[in-house]
Image (tube, rainbow, N blue to C red; front, side, top):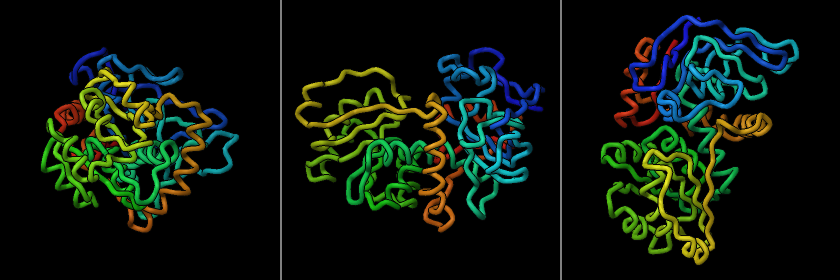
Length: 325
């Protein structure tokens, strides 16, 4: 099969389309013929040698999500069938014509969705759903601050929060992305400049926000502490602005607030299975009823993987970037 391979740690030039051995599914696995592979910033880090995959996943083939059609099922699989359209997350190896995943982690593609288009759903919507609702318990009428609202996870979080009846404030470094997010239901647009915390406090009448979905990290930490409401919850999902920053523990104590981090990639299998089932039950109907939509910025062919990585590194996308097979 063909796969996009990291030949050595480095820039986009180290990505090559090569022939590799096709994987075989075990008894509880499925082999999926991939229609599209979603790009994620973790892929950029893995390419540079900064984010190795969990044990058991290929070190030289990136890719954390897939959509496609089941080609083969393991002998112990009785809940899925050959020819069924599925999507999901994986620890790696999704930049390939075929990927093997545990059958229990696969999610059916929403009715009416093309398998290529569905590739923009799994990682971003499952990450946002898990972080906001399963971990932080976002409720109707609570306020949510989404940093990098124009990113893949940002656009997913925005839609999910609006659907749940939350008040959403979104930041971005570009006005164009804020305007695009407004078309998805963003009520309060905040430019991510040096005074963004003051604007958030103005919007909330000085009370701050109940939940922060932090897709930026680093330099935003001080501002996040400033705008977090009493008993507020801050969850860190991405750190493109840096993994280290000074933290005021006294502020945390006075606010009675909490901060936590999350990632899906290294989760135990049972947690990924639980998330897949909850997601299928709670979120997929939103796509089928037209309440949610996949946001695809641009689609590249697999032969253009270098261009796709370069495009993401330039922070030009609003929503997801896909590779098609």
